[in-house]
Length: 227
Image (cartoon, rainbow, N blue to C red; front, side):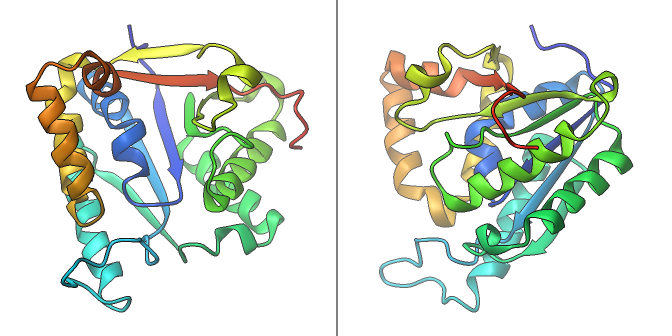
């Protein structure tokens, strides 16, 4: 059961991070009447897929991914989409305090009861890690009584050994079609993966169904050193 929140703030670095990991949760909150803000730090300028034959260049890909990000937001029913203007694969090189200040400003403005981001040290990509550290530090520096809940997505190979079982598992079966549409919106980067996923769903593959209908989160443990 997904709890009703006052406001949800979602922070990820790349277009499509939201679609795969949390679009069902976002759509569920919106259906409950909760305001959701999604801050996407980059436009995925360095996305791997330019097509074969190419459908894009490095110069045109940001515009394509911006349109896809907007389409994903529309699919989820999300109206408050923030594009924060950083550059893909450079988030890790941004000044730490600048990043924390950006997160603090978002939190101060939106006053969320729940923040969703990646779990630092368990999210693989350097831009994911930098984003996660900044969000965690911003929340950590708040008075404990004023901190929002912090739900983190983790998928490194050692996640289970280090963090154990997820603290929160959201069943998003009711909005599975919305989640799939959010993923389809990012088709420039996801075509091959979606083709396989939809084939498996059509075959009622239990693993594929589980992946699409359950979204897993860990509560951040503030004794882990990001201050």
